Length: 179
Image 1 (cartoon, rainbow, N blue to C red):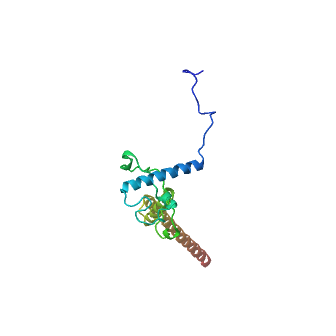
Image 2 (image 1 turned 60 degrees about the vertical axis):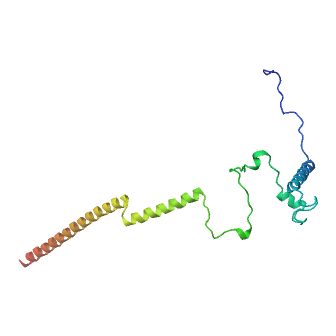
Image 3 (image 1 turned 180 degrees about the horizontal axis):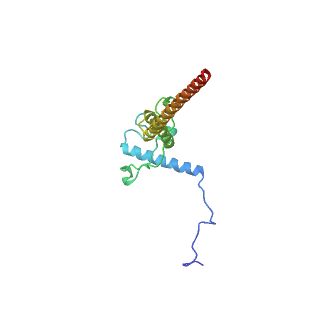
């Protein structure tokens, strides 16, 4: 047995549920009470059955459900409390939708767009030769061009030498033939 005797638990008890009819009756009684208090506050502007504007259809039971607010007690009436974490759902009509206006992007979409723009900026800078990688590439290209030019000059000199040797060989043959 636990220390301090047996403690009661909510488990195993019979639960009581309020029926929808009882809830509706309670709400109706509260509305009636609030209506009587409101009429008492007006200070007898008219008979009990008269409404201030005289339009009874406006104060039907359906509109009372929409406009009904409980009277706040104490400082509740002075302090307006609203939960900032509560998301208020508002239904928009099709005519109110702004399809042409700017669309709010998610964080991932914004990051993806920023990444693409950064890549495009880098490529423009690279093509203009302003990045370090582009400068290194251009330096390597210059070295390669220089090597190729030297190789081309060397090859051209070898061709000239070979041509000269062939001419000399032909001249020698000609001289041998003439002798």
